[in-house]
Image 1 (cartoon, one colour):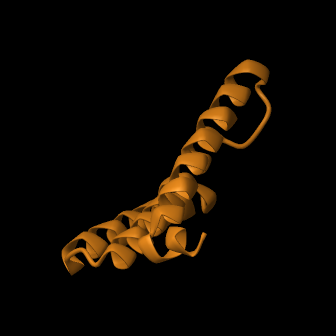
Image 2: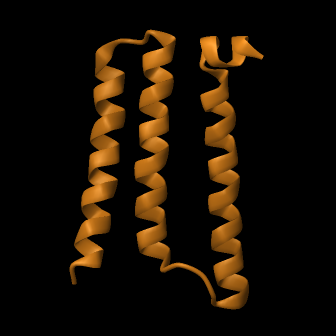
Length: 87
């Protein structure tokens, strides 16, 4: 089990589960009309997944530019979410 953490594969599994969760929440919202506001949810999901991707990049030893790109994506998601909430 420790190889999952050492290789970073655990982050891949969490990213897949997060994508499945996002798809389920969007499906549920369209089906019932209940749940979070779609735009805010997607921006928060983007930010979280970008942070997970940055962790994956760091664990894999990839070049710093990829981590910076992932962190910039997380920042963009957070800023967009904040902008919607402050209206």
